[in-house]
Image (cartoon, rainbow, N blue to C red):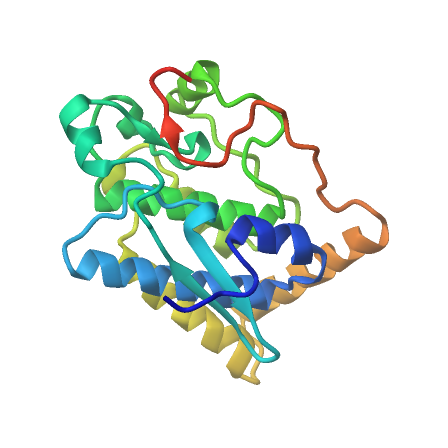
Length: 234
């Protein structure tokens, strides 16, 4: 297996979030969505997508990502047999907490939370315990607040991924195509567009917040867990 020198997405964000621009964020999400699309095209479901199994390698001209699942994040087959739920609470779709098995749609929900994490620069719900109360609130519709300055087109797609109704979520194929188009519009096309203008404005807001020390930095709660574990006893 190829070695990814920057580790997983959690570690990478802790090291580089202050210098990670929106164009890099979109490029990374294109790579992640392409990986998820590859999995789904083979009629497979990941089931445990979160920052711990997205590997990152940053080079001078690009940031490469790879979705992994080494089998250390919870026995998927046993989950189906035992009705136990494994995962990282913030990345688990609400329908899974209701007893449904993982689907392509629940993978897309997890992807939406990855979008939020990249936009915010912090892990989701890092300031509170990951327990039954959080699960209850997620099932009632709790989602992380959209970060000030997030491009509207980005927040709209993210909220679609996090929709409580699985059928309202985009497919991985649609996400792959969308992010590919965004990369062309904001990175390659020299002509300004509404899309590129949104990301340019977001870039200005982000670096203004950095200069004013308003960037999101939260100490992680001691009961906020970001590895897959049995959740029925959370």
